[in-house]
Image (cartoon, rainbow, N blue to C red):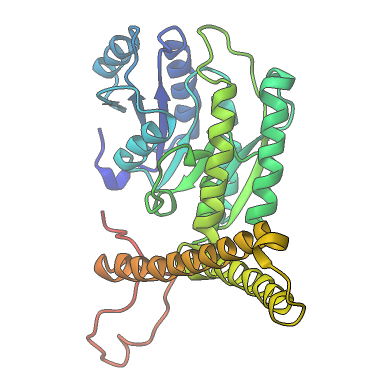
Length: 340
């Protein structure tokens, strides 16, 4: 295979029990990528398959030097499998897709056209889905609507794996849980330019789907995580402190009311307003706890960023006359290591 520096495109495909679909997908991918005419590599990730997927992938690997095979020790899930492929990929542009033939490789050139236009991330939009309406389409539409509102990104479909990325964008994003479906939201926080292209959602020809209603629940939980990461990861006091101030404020108002009842109206607080007094104490104490959590979060965030020298911003480009002026100091460059 050619050297890493000559690879233009990397196609990352995770597989889990897809032995029947692998040969057809491989043939379609090579046909499309050969037609593009640029150096490319295929990064196939076996996510702990129980069938003969790894054997089929190994046979392909032996006959095609453009194929790279990454095998995980067990089934970690789609997000870790994609991350393993992204970390291994060396193409300037990385394309990810599912291994069940529901994504058509013939649509890859449309993604690359958008990349050539200057976008950093191109996401597929399953505009005419053929999944089960109640079990798949309805939860997906609800999640996509919420994600678009919370992130401020005007995308119709966050969840599809069929995406194209510039390598420096995707390899700087830390993925875990089910966060692969929220990559556009995470990338937007670094200033990535994002586009969307309509794609066909083909019927699965063979094998059994690995998706279920249980995954939808995990998606909604990850949605909360993403919102917190986008807005409050570097300023947790803005979130917890607001809850703390609200709790202490309402607790103090109730305490003032109870004090008025006690000292001016001479009522028995425990007899007349026992539950209200307990609520006042609970609100005030919980407010103090939330505020304390915010302060601790600020300390942890500061320690995290400073100890790892992790930047709190991401540069796209730097233009400077330092070299012309004879400044030998190292110039600022975008976060991450572009030389790797």
